[in-house]
Structures are given as structure tokens and as C-alpha cells.
Image (cartoon, rainbow, N blue to C red; front, top):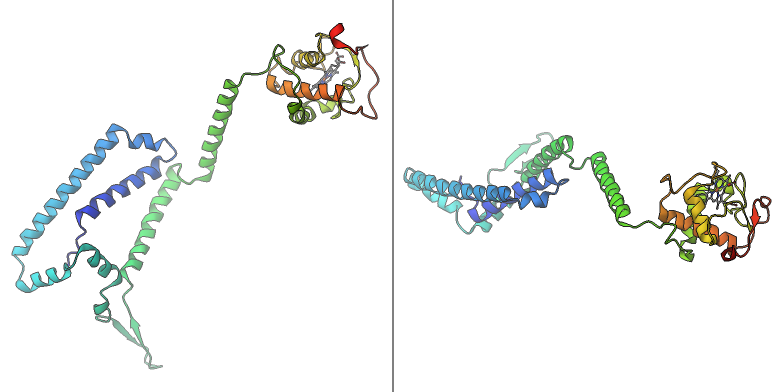
Length: 294
Ligand code: HEC
């Protein structure tokens, strides 16, 4: 039997299978740019032309063959090819309902008198089954050898992309410096988180002092700037000249300028606005209340 798929279905579906394979194997790379590359485009054009040629040759062979067939065989072929393609396709996958009971094997159980009909499996079922086999083979090899659907590789790619984005973001975001940093109420909360992470071991999370001095009182050891906020920023950036325990967080690159602005806002806030802690470390340094006047 010759069940012919017309070229208007055959060619586009072959092309889409190829494009799908392309997508599967090059997915983790920039596959769109590969797909629109002139080489790929010409490859597809050539494939289309080849498929068309194949189609013509097939037709020719079929016509040649027809001449050698008997009338009976010809009639059968035309009968099978009656109706348009979609009708034939429907008949093919669901079986011809009229012919359904022809050629059905009957299995006799004998002992219980039941006769079992051994129907042929419908075509759509059988083909779906073949399709799963083909799919599993493609999946298996692409899983083994490509980045496709391997969670570890996918994770690594996503992770690297994320790092790249962070790097670009940091490059393009200007960092605060001692010149342009200002006290900002909106930064207090994030500043507190950073303070707890980086400074609380020596200053306590409320700034009341531990190894380092109390940051909530009006006594200051380090006086480098005329403005309290800038003074705080400056000591976090440069560290203390007289005690290396308070290291240069900014200069050494340990904390970025924007984060120091946040931390300074928090320290300024606990020093100027929030309630004083109940227990705190004793006064160290000089008492300064009005900063701008020194
Ligand atoms: C390893 C302990 C340690 C850590 C961590 C630390 N400090 Fe200090 N800090 C000190 C010490 C000790 C001093 C006193 C320096 C001196 O005597 O000049 C100090 C001084 C300071 C001062 C100046 C106080 C003054 O009276 O002059 C500020 C402001 C300050 N620290 C803020 C911070 C901030 C903000 C952080 C977190 C980014 C931090 N410190 C992390 C130990 C530490």
C-alpha cells in the first residue's frame, strides 16, 4: 500500500523537526542568532529544495510503476487513495470503521467458552508509542552530552549569568564617596542589617560598645571631619589611625561605598535620633555636641 503524505505537509513538518532539534541542542547558547545566521538559513533553503526534488522523483517513480501494475492492483491503489489527504489520514490512524472487524484474530479460551477478539491496536496509539521511544533516545543523549535539561549544568549557567549581571550592575552604579555621601533616613534599615553583619561583634548591634567604643554617645576618639555623618563615613572608610582593630573597611574594598553610606546612616541615626541603650561602654575620647563648630 502506498500511503502518501502530500508535500505541503511533509516539507514543513520535516523542517520543523530539524528546527526543534536545533533548539534542543543549542538552547543554552544564543540559538536565535544561530538560527538566523546566513549559513543556517542557506542550509534550510537547500534542505527545502532537496525535499522538493525528492518529492518529484518519488512521484515519477510512482507513475512509472503504475504502468507495470495489473488493472486489479491499480483499482486497489486508487481506492486506497480516494478522498483528500486528511480523510485518508483519519482512516489511517483510526482504521477504517467499515473494515474494523475484518481480519480480527479470535482467541478461543476453550475452557470457559469465551472468545476473545484480538483487535489490532489503533495506529494513533502505536505511533504515539514509537514517538515516545524516539523522544527518549533524543532526550537521553542530549541529557548526557549537552547542557539540555541537566539541572547541574543549568544551575551553573544561571549562576554564572547572575554573577555577570551583578558585576555589570556594580560597574555601572556609582559608589558613594566621602564627598557625596549624605545621611538618608531610607537607608537606616538596610544599614542596620549591614551593621549587625559587619560591626556588631565589636560595637554591639545597638552600637552600645564592646571591644570598640560606644557609638551612641557624644564622645569621639577619632575626629577627622567637621560633620558628624562625614566623620563616621570617614572612619569606616579609612579605619582608625591609632588602633588597627578598627580596620579600613572602605579602602581595603571589604565594604563598598554605597553600603558604607547605609551603615553610616544607621550609626548617625542611633547617635542622633534613637533612644540611648540602657547599658553602654563608658565614655572614650572628646565630648563634642555641636560638630560644625569645631
Ligand atoms: C574588630 C573589631 C571592630 C569591628 C569589626 C569594627 N570596629 Fe569600629 N572600632 C573598633 C575599635 C577598637 C575602635 C576604636 C578605634 C580607636 O581607638 O581609634 C573603633 C572605632 C569606631 C568608630 C569611631 C569611634 C570613635 O569614638 O572614634 C566608629 C564610627 C566605628 N568604629 C564604626 C564601626 C563600624 C560602622 C563598623 C562596621 C563596618 C565597625 N566599626 C567595625 C573596633 C571594631
